[in-house]
Length: 197
Image (cartoon, rainbow, N blue to C red; front, side, top):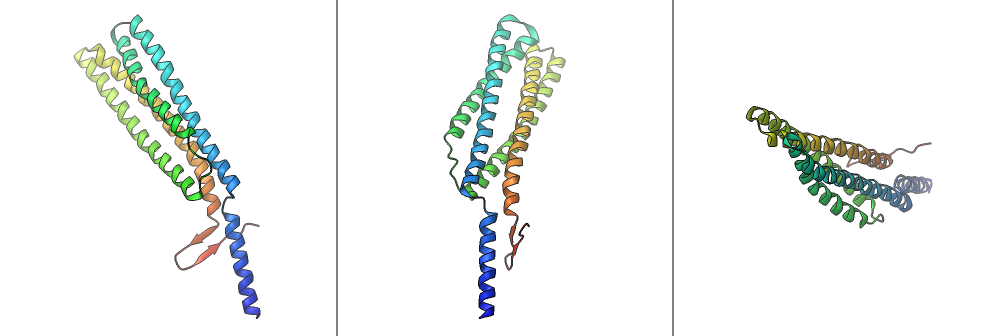
């Protein structure tokens, strides 16, 4: 009888501790609301950058010449794409539900962070292509190549900083969530439970 009672108590402690380690639905919803807010604010920042570049680029093309004209031209063209991405991204994020489960939340964080890292790699590529165009424009005495190259370095640099900052902010939130789950570890043959006191 003592063995059964001891086993019953251990199972109850294990079960209660497992429940303690899981974020409750209210806190999980708060985590998702924060994730959605972070991502939607990021799309607003990207959209603001795009609108600013479109306005300055359009005016700059009309009022300048030479290399500067092509810099403004590429900035305006580049940010038509940025504005589209920001608009569709904002719309998609605002329509996400904060009431999703734990595994879906982790998946959302993971997928978003993978996209940001991939984009950061592309951003470095944009800057490299920009440097190549700038250098080639100097050799060929081409204002267009120089201006386009300078623009690509500027736009790639902004996007790299944007993606890196957004990655670190998102990763900080996802790491907090993952750490709350580290109290329970399963090795395949044993279940280990860490109970903080």
